Length: 404
Image (cartoon, rainbow, N blue to C red; front, side):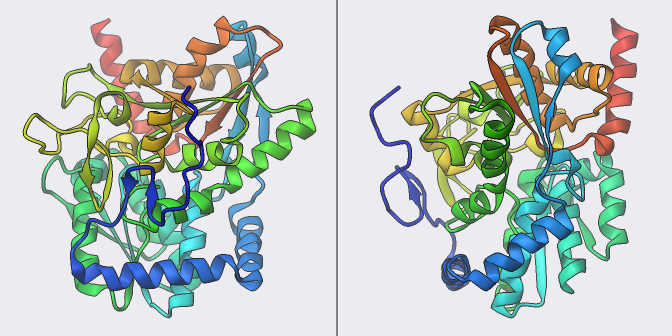
């Protein structure tokens, strides 16, 4: 590990060399307004009290810290705890962010929100926040993800959101984000764009991370209460990286805690067959920020693949890029097959069906735990539940069964 600081020195909008605002001038006023309102809100005791009320009364926080006893026994090594973000209202960690940004939308006096979504969980959480706060809501979603996540499409529509299909590119998350940005450029005066991850232009990476830090702050207290110490390892999946940033950041300066981010290894290491941005990408600009990006030799954003729609993204949050460079977080990947195997194992040992995104973190845990002593502790951020993935999992397992 290098001797560089784990929390970068103050440079608004940047984490080391990563971050910034690389967007058209038409959006700079909206970004400045958002930054000012966010900073004012975080210093406003009334706003914070309302946010915490929403976390408690709407999201159902604090989420449970769960000792996975039979999963631990099956692995035969370190004790495995799950931070149960899957038990939040709407089924994932995404609600933590949409409640915060929904309150900011009201504070800015705007009446409409837009969002992009891949797995659909951020779209569902945005639709829920819009319903709670009385806002118009449009959600951009790639047609391939609409196919994979039909249940979440219905949930969004039932809560009053309009789901707008995106049929350009690979018809997945990156393409949905492109269209949402185009909408925002034309409608920023009355519309707030609720970005779902710690990616995008400043202040989104900082703001979304802060709204997700309730995960790590609760985890810290819960582990000290239950075990009297912090975990030896924290494992979380990384697409854009919001659940990982949320659980890592409150313990980032606790050097005794190892942190592992798990990306989508997909089908192979061939470009276009995975979404392992930090493992196999290089620095570049995507969706308004400098970060690691999957790109070809000409600097064009590469196609990506993951069995998990929420990890199907060729970029990553700039703070993760900084943590990678200084060695504070180790980033690795899990293949589609490893994620499916982890899904089956947790389902059969604990009766918990994880989201395919979260299953990538479980797959890495299945590698780590047997190599560690039984006195060691691994904490996994179980970022979402797998109801949304059941049809896709069933189809893949049936196909795999026929070929094995």
